[in-house]
Image 1: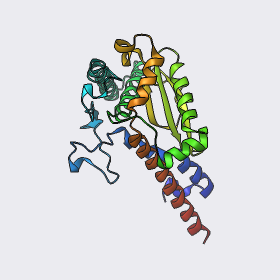
Image 2: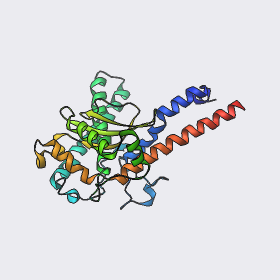
Image 3: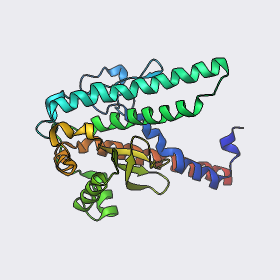
Image 4: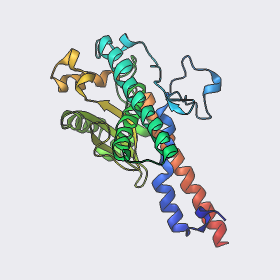
Length: 269
């Protein structure tokens, strides 16, 4: 008998609703299929390129560095991807190596600092991997389908959602991110601010739209005009990517709750 099957049905449902959407973390890989080998895709058509041989890897962009101009400058994209994101990948892998060394020697004096480094760098890797995929030279406009309906239901309109998201991004204290999360416990969309790479985390919620407002994301082009950068960024948002993330997560959540309900019916019988 597994630990899961030992839980009462009500508690199992709570657990599933809390962690079910976490399968969506697979979406940190590219949702673009351009240039991808068939062997790299799973049943959902998603491409996983943020890991390699048990370590984190810098994913390739699904477009050229200059493809998002004039909204985001080519030089910014090159530095941001090849230097900053690569730095987070290297930092996360370095932390993994340090963990292995500490385990082999049974010496954990530096564990607090290394755990902090890993949290910062791994979060930076995940945040940026989603960020690149959330943008496209063919982006902009408004979403459609189930995701558009969810925005209207929960925020009143797409314009109201965009205004709240922009305000959150403009007012992130110092460096950080604005994010739209899918929150599986209440089946909600939540706009949040993330300070640095990992502060003010929304535990259990999955980011489906991320906007980097660290100065390195815009300063070379917009200087200290963060609001101008945010306004231009809406022109490159890839709503197809965001919608796929949302639909994947909500379907996964529905499937797991349905399966749990079926298990409960069998138990009652």
